[in-house]
Image 1 (cartoon, rainbow, N blue to C red):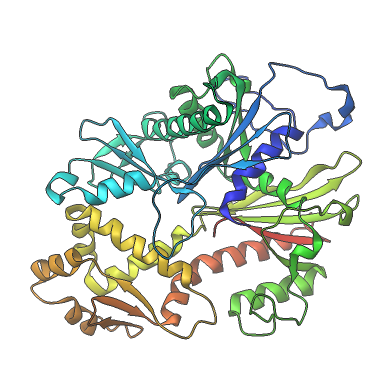
Image 2: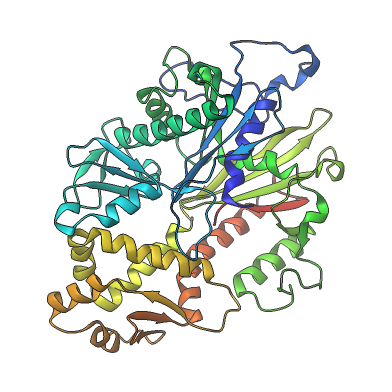
Length: 481
């Protein structure tokens, strides 16, 4: 599934389930997918609160974010946010990067591509006064004593309140969505007519989930005395609803011998994939599928009691949920508590940074990030494009452009060239190209993926050992990673 759908799923969630609004400061109001209200007659149409014209779901991701919306009269007709200007060569995006830029006096300036491009074009002497933040969502997961006073660090090293940053980001999506709805309606759209949904990882602790609700109150997305206007939904549960809408023939059975999309399951597509396939097949006699991006109905294939696992791999986290179908209404029963960890795709970025530290020295990388923050952003954009071009069976090298200021600053910092550093580093699988590029052989790129993927495979292995997780019919792999 592409990243675009994860926001889409949340719209469906609201159309099907009654919210559990926050009762107090400590309860962010997570909407469960296996509620006790399955006993209600769905035809009774019991309304417990105000009616909303439209549901807007914000998929607030670690690396990129977006929204989708659906009018309550047509819940199955789901619209994804319109494309905005910006983008990267060689990278296909349905969403905009989760990047934010504040002016030197700490006022909101821009979000997404606009923030990144403006920051990139600033003069280096000027850019160090601006506050630029990216991939900041994981701070909510990794901070032990998270509170409304928790700080984040901008690219220039300055501290800023996390609540302000999340509030600015949600406020930005509020404005964008209302503007798009107003353009569609031909008149100004009222925020009171919108039910908002924000997705969070299932493995987040309660304070992190509550923090998102506080940020929503702060930016005026919803009012504190109207908590039911906001639903905090769990990302893998939203994906689970989406998976029920897939047709069986739109999934690729990895147990077959036929080549699919140029790949044959019998070819060597990486030891990790083979090991995972064998583990599942040997222990559970289940089928493992790659899901293609087409909406359909899997409903006719699912029977009462069928069990499936959703593995939601995002930028920051990997969430695993185990669900069982409950008929006739099709409610889901959670068989095992959501699990997972910080095994998202930014782990690959961290490995690339560690590789750069090994070649050029951690002291240089730390200084370069502070002294040339816009050039560091450029370098990571270049890496992102190459990262997405990686494939287990690739044989030709991947070239990553080094910004001129990286080459120039390194010469000033060390007194010798980047090429000299590569020769001295003993890193055999990364070479220097005279065109100003790092040439990584395919094994080098695979090595950057390996620690993160090993974590995911290990966690799946442990999950399948649990007695509650037996007789799994489907394994759905979803998310941007």
